[in-house]
View 1 (cartoon, rainbow, N blue to C red):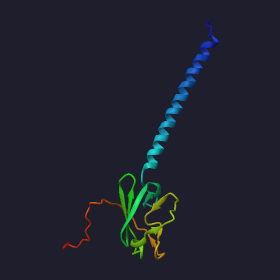
View 2: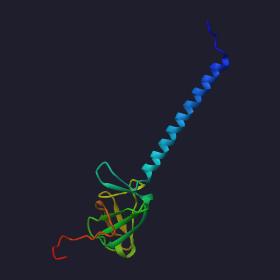
View 3: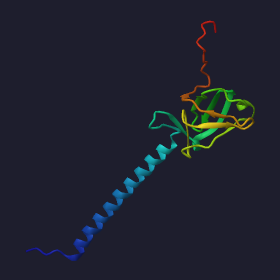
View 4: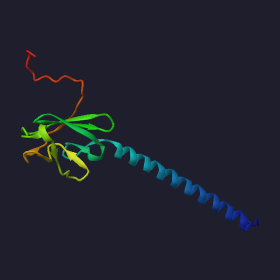
Length: 142
């Protein structure tokens, strides 16, 4: 009959414990990395199919006309929103909004308010925007 020394048993448990902590640490690091990568994404698609922009990822906006808002993201991408109708005063003094959900702006779901006229205007769909892309109205004479 062989006898095990207490030290050998303790050594085995210590090695097992160290391996378990290593595994847990690696899993936690991988999860943190995945979470960070997901939160760095500037846009997502809601359950209703609408594009939602993360407000923390919005760098600035431009309003080329009374019906269009361009959202420029911190990662260099851009999104165009064509409002459901003209928004009087939008170009002159900009707009405000109360994001709902609080950390996102979702197309076809939220409203904005013109600062100058207090007009409430409904956002349309978000579409990817390329600054150098020339947009045509469909008129063959352009």
